[in-house]
Image (cartoon, rainbow, N blue to C red; front, side, top):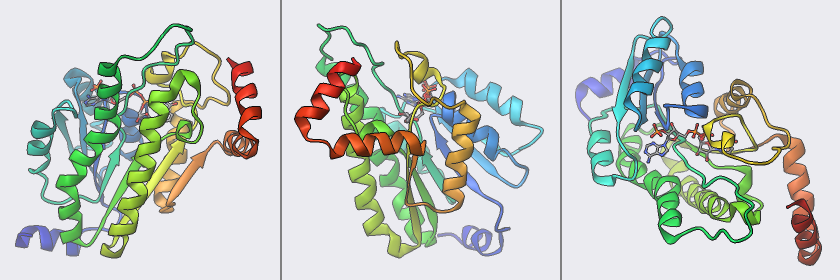
Length: 262
Ligand SMILES: NC(=O)c1ccc[n+]([C@@H]2O[C@H](COP(=O)([O-])OP(=O)(O)OC[C@H]3O[C@@H](n4cnc5c(N)ncnc54)[C@H](OP(=O)(O)O)[C@@H]3O)[C@@H](O)[C@H]2O)c1
């Protein structure tokens, strides 16, 4: 760590945060940027849609003058890592970039291997590509927060969302292992499992989404959980309890209920 970075870490204001948000061009990521946009914060906003990121920076300029844009496809792992290696200090990364295939209920639809692979590249592999670069930095700093954006869908797999659910379940396992290993270095690991929140991702769904939250409401809940360093935060509670109950049932009964929901 160079002397400037060591000096910065020692004397910076406790409320001042340098935050990297992946998938910041829409939905939860853009709203996280809006809610973290404060004069004392430095935001690094990452996504593919360059214009969206520049528009957001313009929108937030009055509240936060320190916003850097990183335009990259997170599945271009080498370019992604090259860009992240330029970061010399960081307080928090929010691993939010993610995709779904939409919940199509068409009986004959089978996801292609290419769709499956792409989804895993974005939702799981890119997360490791980011952390392969950032973990050594956080370790050197002896500080840092890693926030995973998983999903309630990781706890219950519907036939129409099995690929998405399996990617988020893989993410939970990965986050758990990272926590066990890096907690001792002063690194906080937070896993967020939201239910439905309004965004471009949920706009694709062709069914009524129970207990769906407004984007700003969902993101405020996420930020409160981050501030409290919750290891795992699952919401809305009512939806979580329903899933917990369903998971307690014998599997033949659960199968009957799931198929009746379709
Ligand atoms: N909304 C919900 O109900 C809900 C519930 C649980 C969990 N989540 C999770 O929350 C996260 C955000 O989703 P959202 O609902 O806000 O959806 P969204 O509006 O579609 O946002 C997805 C973000 O990910 C970025 N992204 C996707 N593929 C990328 C790629 N290859 N490279 C770089 N960036 C990429 C998109 O940016 P570009 O297209 O500009 O690259 C966009 O900024 C996802 O991980 C999702 O699984 C959402």
